[in-house]
Length: 371
Image 1 (cartoon, rainbow, N blue to C red):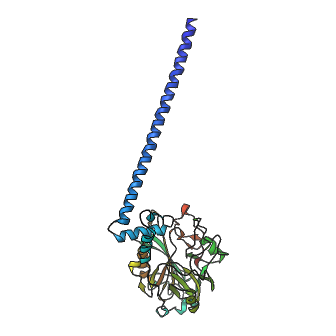
Image 2 (image 1 turned 180 degrees about the horizontal axis):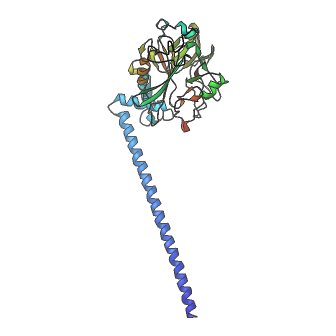
């Protein structure tokens, strides 16, 4: 009997000891997670306060150039446009943004562009073994003689892609089935028009932040039909007339009619006009994914995209785009919508790395395409 009681006590003591050990383990784990959570919270607070302090120094410090660059960076990312409002009033921000706008009395001088006859009319060529493909004045070679040159471009901290279409009349603007709803991806636009390729073009209204891309911003003309006639132009304009000349500037609807413009979108800023680069004062920007369209003196259209926000390419500034386009003979050039919208499609695939979430190209309101 005594032995039985002793066994029960020992058994109860062992169970109690196991419970205590289990409880101690739980308490120890809880203390660990509590400390970890506290560390994370304190770290977030410290980092947050540090970032706010840094922002305050940038916006209120002694360097207007650094302030303007920061504001421009936040503006270009769109979703962070509100950040400068933490320390600056709407009036102060408007003063900075308004001061950066360039003069609007830009008119394209078509006399600077001579569209070569063999770019619009097929000519008989000698066999390749006799003549062979040769570099043009800008060091580019049309290897297969199809009138399209595709090449990779590199700069300080960025990687991009350039397509040159020798015949400007092959270039046009494509749009979704209707404006106001959901846009189409560049691939879908290329397929819709049975095109060879293209780039994203103008910006779109995104008041709800959904990124549907169905409603373009500013004056837009497609196949001679004008959309958003009364919207006007804010940062710039790029349009092709019936003869294949690329116009850049700040055109009204009446200007477009007077110049026989049949394909056009609104965006900016203007990068090069009549062979003259835009004053850097008006080109304050951060490094970001970029898209641009330009025209050489021989009429060839340049489509350019620069990857950004990625390990292999952080992006380019407006000035980077100007310098690069000038080196390839651009006479007129205009910046297009960039950031997550920057895409180039050619020969059945996207050739650049899209910076949108998940790398999935977003719906677009329009695109510059080529046949």
